[in-house]
Image (cartoon, rainbow, N blue to C red; front, side, top):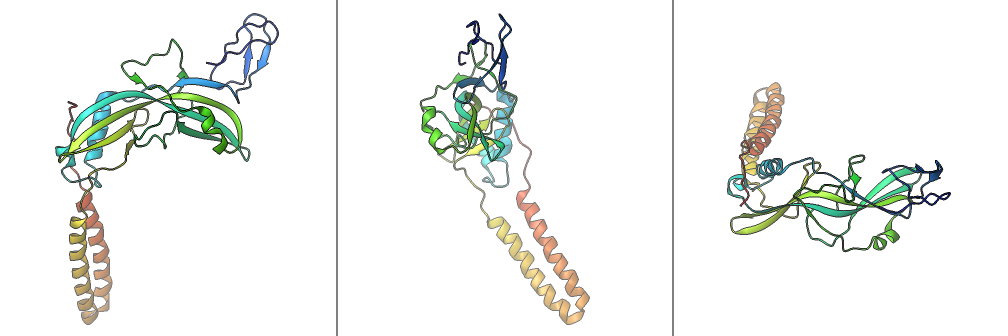
Length: 256
């Protein structure tokens, strides 16, 4: 944490996260804290344990957009619990507070450019902060490299160690990566095995053919039938979506 001193007696000031005023514990002097240029250090604790992270990954593999056998065929080869360094910039833009998050380490991990730091959950990162069994990744990007691109007036800036689970997995001989946000459970990927759209196209094609045939016959027999057939067509479309999106319950994935 930055060092702040009492302007009257020179004693060190204890500055709490998010505060703009500090009271000297020795002489009682109240001091305004200029946080706009100081760099604070925080840690965002994990709210999701490793078992829950595996469950989140398993449910993601069973999603409607993924390959239909990804849930059963995906094999986790590595799962790493980490605190990833992220710069947090709080700025005032047009009278409103805006928060920017930028990676403090060069990385190709998915999602590191899109992290959201929840307000109020961070703790001061010092000798008392507990990182548990997670690896702490150190920054290698200077904070000054981001300042020219940021709009607005600075309020404060901080380095936040953000909780993530880095997952490597294999599917049909190919390797993939995923990142799970250790605070929200969000899943980030760059690429993943996706489900073929052939099933959806087949069901929709059948619904369209039957709907067209029914429409022709409906007009020939009775206009009321035409309206009913159109309604049936849209019902078929809805059913097609339900058929394709149906997924099995998730099973436990064991990391190797």
